[in-house]
Amino acid sequence: MNKTTQLVWLATFFTMACLSARPATAAKYKVIDVTDGGTIEGVVRWEGEIPKRSILSVTGQDKPCHVKPIKDEELVVSNDGEVRWVVVYIKKIKQGKPFDFDPKKPVTLDQKGCQFSPHIALVGKGQPLSILNSDGVLHNVHLYAKKNEPFNRSMPGDMKKMDVTFDYSERIRVGCDVHRWMSSWIVVAKHPYYVVTGADGTFRFEGVPAGSYTVEMWHEKLGKQKTEVTVTSGAEARVEFVLKQ
Amino acid sequence: MKARHGGAIALGAVGLAMGFTLSQTACRSAGSAASTASVATTGSIASLEGHALFMAHCAPCHGVTGRGNGPAAIALTVAPRDFLRERFRYVSTLNGVPTDEDLSDSIRNGRRFGEMPAGPQLTDDEVRVLIDYVREIQRLGWLEDLRKEFADDDDTSPEEIEEISHIRVEPRDAIQVRRPAPSFQRKTETGRELYTANCASCHGLSGRGDGMAKPLDEQGRPISVRDLTSGEFRGGTKIEEIFKRIRCGVPGTPMSAAVALSDEEVWQLVYYVRYLAGQI
Image 1 (tube, chains in turn orange, yellow):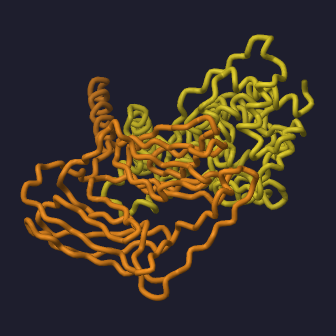
Image 2: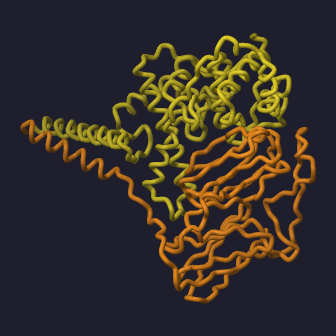
Image 3: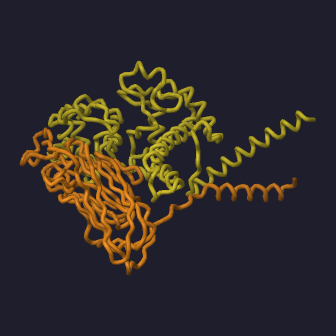
């Protein structure tokens, strides 16, 4: 084998090896103009005795932590049996409406009364999130991210705002090591069909292109459930999830 | 004749494997991601040499696979680092990933006031190879974790998971640490105020590490808050090293990065810490 042939072989081999190592991309969400979409709405209900919310054990001398009792946000069920803080989303939706967030109006995650508020902050990929410190005492924002960059940053009392954005969709647990009872989640949505249930346990997706979908829910303590639903143009499809201990 | 052919085929196969590995490495440095099953089976020249060095110098404590479970670990009071599950602690970057210099410092000088011994017998090349090797172990830990967590995720392809695993072990540029003017090199009232606002919640007002109840690391294991009055800083006692611990935090622990403070403020904290340690 002469030198030229060797070089050609080497170049071919190198190119093939590079091509084989190049990352393929996942099927990405495609934004379309949804003109004849339908709606999915529903509720997350509780079955059985309504669980009582515990009062968290608060330590330390920081005054804002002792203004009022801090209730556990992990499992919140209304007297009528509706479950709060459940993330509901359409799974594997290929196309639909665009995110409608205003880049100038970030979602906020406040640290107030030594508690994160809201308990679950929902943001889109690339949407700004402002982490606030209304307490005026030292907190540390500890993000246990995996796809996005994990970090643990000090937020002293005089630092009122920290802006962050996320490149990847995931659920990120957030904690504060100074006040260990503080816990929340940042949910980075991959598309606009994500919602977090409020006190009445309801959720609603508008402008869903007609078709069959899997709607999935996630709760930090009770895990995931999913159900199938068919959306038709101009109509409302109903979904209900039932949780129990 | 047959034997000679067999030898040539074996040599060719080794050459092909080496060539493929080297080209994969070249591709990866160009921004792509290569797939590897385990550090020991990557087949790269560096990994094979790294594997031998790791077995000889690190595995007795850190374990054959780097999980911190070597035979000598049982005799240690501080568990050796599990490279697959834990983050490196002593960094000079703001993304919590050590630079080669950070890792070289740990390997060469050990961890003062800890149980990681110094490795002065290693050559520069050997340290370099070991750094690549432990980084690869840590990347595989991320890969395993990411695959488990996002197996059912429709937004992330396996190739992206692979790519993210590389990002997780890629250090950003080291922060600049410039010694302050001599007029700054003392304990100040501002330093005390900054300490009260930024450090006392965990380290205590007097610095004895008694400000926080039952601290845990990211694995949920109890750890102690450093008693600053002891003057024993595992990340190093030089002022530049204390500066880095304050600015970059200690990944994997409650010690957070003071990203909001100016360099001057961090220096004032450094000298207040030295004061608490009775060193100025």
